[in-house]
Amino acid sequence: MSKIYEDGEYLENNPSWHEEDSPWKAQQIIKMVEKNRLNPSTVCEIGCGAGEILFQLSEKYGDKQYFGYEISPQAFELCQSRSADNLNFYLKDLLEEDERFDLVLVMDVIEHVEDCFGFLRKLKDKGEHKIFHIPLDLSVQTVLRASPITKARASVGHIHYFSKETALETLKDTGYEIVDYFYTCGSTELPNRGWKANLMNIPRKLAYKVHKDLAVRVLGRYSLLVLAK
Image 1: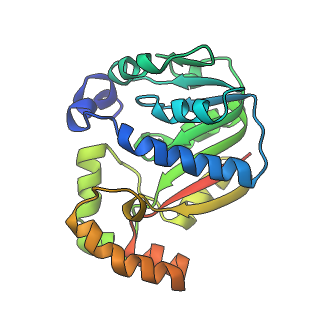
Image 2 (image 1 turned 45 degrees about the vertical axis):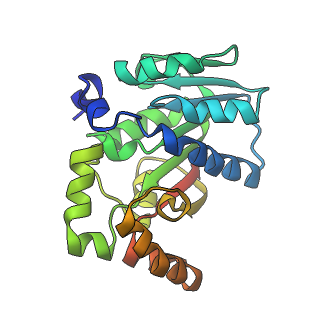
């Protein structure tokens, strides 16, 4: 599957490389960082895409050093306009480099990686803290309909499908200590999700107020942001 990120196929299917969602994702990271009173001097993102998440963070916390690693030549080209004195991008596989950072960001990555267990084990020593953003593609709704899962596979390259429970257990199985986590929902918080998503957001919001876990498990379209060591 990794070839689609290197041969241009992923860019063809996703011309913006999801850049439009990056300010929102950066806000989720800021929320987690401030909630847990983290103060990293060096921040790295593996699979940084167009680099906009790191750019947003560098605007918020200008006294840090930021490093983005990307294996896709197309995404790396998109990063270049965002480079700065405290923000550097590399067309390299972080797992092959002898580097370590205070905080490593893994934003919507592990669901794309064929050997996600091996990936997570190798990544563990790359930083003191890690923040993962993991789409929760498994829900009652997506299993009954099936098409959301096959669509995610075809359009954005998801080859692993998680619930909250399996996401957390996968991290634990690969040696991580879970420090904190919370749900995120781009479907309800980001614009232009489509009319079907907008229609479902009414019961989704109501159900989430009553019982978060049940709403996520049944209606789906949520992700999990996890802080781990």
